Structures are given as structure tokens and as C-alpha cells.
Amino acid sequence: MSLFFAQIDPETRIVSLLYASDTPFPTSGGQFVEISESDYRTIQSWPGAQIAKDGTVQRYVPLKTLEGQKAELALILSQKKAAGVYFQPHEVSASLLFPSDDANYSNYVREAQVVSLGGWSDGTHWSLPDGSTVPLSGADVVALFKKVSAYRAACQNQAASLGEALKSNLKTDLTAGWPDNK
Image 1: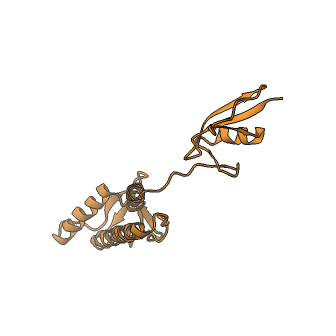
Image 2: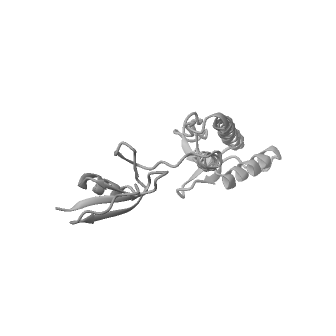
Image 3: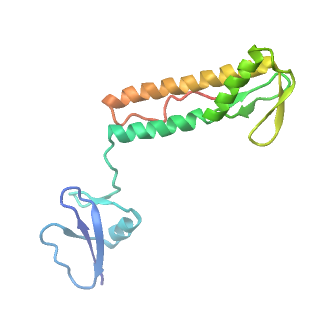
């Protein structure tokens, strides 16, 4: 019959080594604790598992830091701003997903300026990421720019709100409250 042991850090209780043997293993000093075969198998599939003082095995969840949460928020903001915006040009019967990442946003700004200067020809085809094209009027270009701009501003405002909330609660749900892109 095999016996199962785990080496743990006395402070964090994080498992650093598992040991199975047919002979008893010295557990004095508190760094090695005897565990069940079931716990042994669980810990094998949970790198960085912890053994609580009551003997239960838990997944290790690192403490959240303000810097770490801000980095996570920045990543989410970037993803949200690039999610695209649904917009229905006047010559199309359904909304289409237009990209809203930084490069495409710059393109919308530029083309809206072209419209304002009278350089846009109505019916000019706009290329979409899937390779298809859609005809846009000058009014469509300006409306698309305004919609993408409003969506990206709403994303920035939500990120700012979440950033403020993080200052008092590191467990703030960073996935909540983002604007709809429709």
C-alpha cells in the first residue's frame, strides 16, 4: 500500500513536491504532510495547490495587486475597443460588424475628414475584414465614425470607472459594465 506525502511551504501552505512511497516518510518539522491518494491526484492536476491548515486541498489563487489588476484592465480595454461595432449602412438591409481597433479608428477619422472636405464619392466600397465590401455614402462614413468614436469613448469611460473602483476594492469585477457594440 502506497503512502502519499506533500512538501509544503509552512507560511503559504503551497505544495512544492509530491512523494509516494511504500514506506513511511518523516513528517516532522511540518514541511511534509501525509495526504490521501485522492488529494495526491488532485494536487497533481493543480499546479501550485495549497493544503489548508484543516487539511483540505485548495487551488492556489495569487493575491491580487493594484498593478496586476490595472494590467488586466488595460488588456480588457484593448480587447473591448477592438471588438468592432455593428453598423447598418443605408444601402444594406442588416447591420455589419466594422472593426474598431486603433488602426481602423484612425482610418474612420481620416475618411470622415475626406467627407467633410467634399472628397468622398457616395457609393465608394468599404472593405471589411472578411474581404467583402459594402458601399458607403458620405453620411454613412460620418455616422460610422461617430458610432465607433462613441463606442470607444464609452469603453475608455468604463475603464476609468473600473480603475477608480480598483483603488478601494481589488476584487472589482473587471468584466462588468462594458458598453454594447450594437
